[in-house]
Image (cartoon, rainbow, N blue to C red; front, top):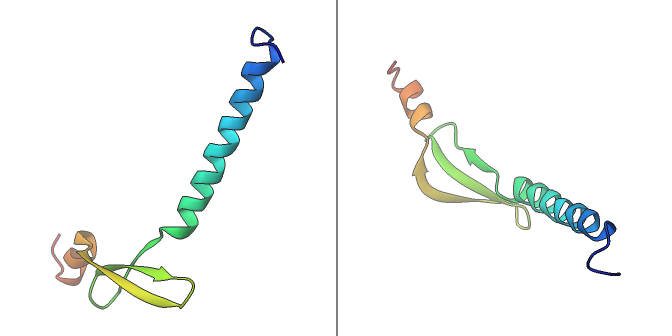
Length: 70
């Protein structure tokens, strides 16, 4: 394939869009930060062992709602 051909940029764009789509789908499924409803602490669920890994961070909106702060 010649570098001056008109098909090369189209093939590269389609390839890069495909790679971007795969990264977005993979990122959404692995990094879901969840909120513990009792403590409002953020955690990530490990799918291999079905355990929660707490991040030591708290969701401010959840804390405000629990404290009934407007």
